[in-house]
Length: 223
Ligand SMILES: NC(=O)CC[C@H](N)C(=O)O
Image 1 (cartoon, rainbow, N blue to C red):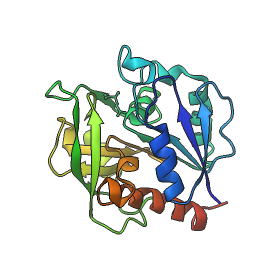
Image 2 (cartoon, rainbow, N blue to C red):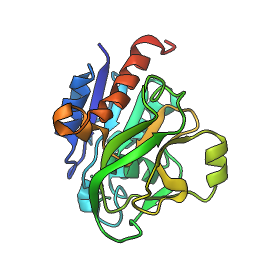
Image 3 (cartoon, rainbow, N blue to C red):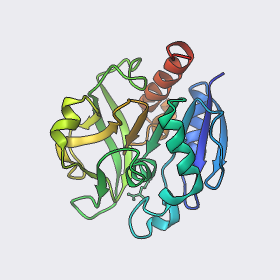
Image 4 (cartoon, rainbow, N blue to C red):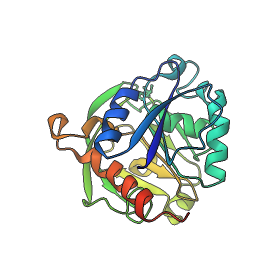
């Protein structure tokens, strides 16, 4: 069984939803407290959403200094498995420099919580390969989701754009809703797949992403 570690910081609030959704997608799960010094045993690291350290200074700005982040950096460099950061998880990954660019306040300066439609841009990554749809309905819930990168052109040319909003809710450059690192073993996205993981919560589109990740890890990973 593929194993996911769910990273928990003081102020994380989507850890339980992540656990539920990952279990629905067939993962074995474990919580990993932010001062933990080993993430080696996981196939997937899930950094969930929330308000780590109360979003003090900037969302993710303090969490990036937690001991577990150094371990995640090593995990990424060694290409041990995959890392996904959702919402505050995405913010933490950009603050840590594991993903390029930055997330700042929504251009409305308001917290936005609603369903959005995103387009799957790069369909050939460990995260997206087995997604069966072109577009997914996934909820957003953030105040700092306005993605910016100075070298947008390069990101696009490298096919590092994972998802684009159909109707941009926050002012992100190029309608970006999610991106990959250069090695395609890290995904950061603002919409919350775990919040639409079963039909009771919407149409279940979020599960598509988690199932795709599990299928890749089970069948296509180079050992
Ligand atoms: N749902 C979340 O992860 C919230 C992210 C972050 N605290 C923000 O408001 O931008």
